[in-house]
Amino acid sequence: MSANALYTDLSGYYDLMCVDIDYQAQSHCVRRLHQMFGNGGDQHLDLACGTGPHVRHFIDFGYQSSGLDINQPMLDLAAQRCPEAEFVQQDMSDFTVTQELDLITCFLYSIHYNADLTKLKQCIESAHRALSSGGVFCFNVVAKDKINNALFVQHGATQADEQFTFRSSWFFQGDGDQQALKLSIEKTCSQQTQIWHDEHPMVAFTFAAIELLLQPYFEVHLFEHDYHKIIPWDGHSGNALIVCVKR
Image 1 (cartoon, rainbow, N blue to C red):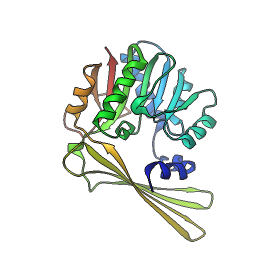
Image 2: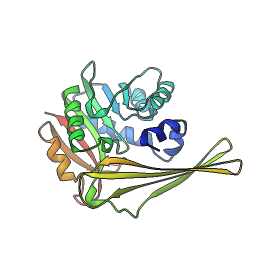
Image 3: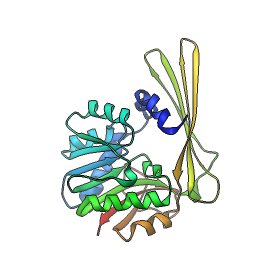
């Protein structure tokens, strides 16, 4: 089953899959970073917005918030959650906007969904074009040279009479610019169990490589991947929150 097919078929379960994510803390942290580095504007776009939980928080913060995703079933759910927001189906690797933005976000490592380094560069260029002067592009990343293929995260959830187990892990083969997000989803209902396995191809890079791609367009700041406190990246950890201010 392809990545898009899985997400299309299971879009109604996506929020269960992400039930352990603290969307409020993530949104609040990036809002604080935008207040520190931004231009004071309130026009916001969330790339790979999924069902819109981050957009919901930014609207509640007072932003004119919108969302973009490649998957229409996700956007349909996002529109129910945030009826006052505009949601558009586009590929974040090459997107356009109708008015300049002050903040572009991309949460949950979704920047890696760009297929390769060429697509990633196109995404960076699209974000740069879309932002107003002093606008901020903020996203989180994992460094390919820090990935431990043996590690995974797993959690369970219940919806009505259905029980779910979700498991995900990074995989990097050791060279090149490709990594994968491996997923397994197990659903049990009426003593019958269905299991989906999928592997999402993603672009892989080091922190040095992403900085080189960003620097022609942005002033780049790296922070520790901690949404509860803002501290500079320590130079060693494998996850980071990147804040880019348009030059």
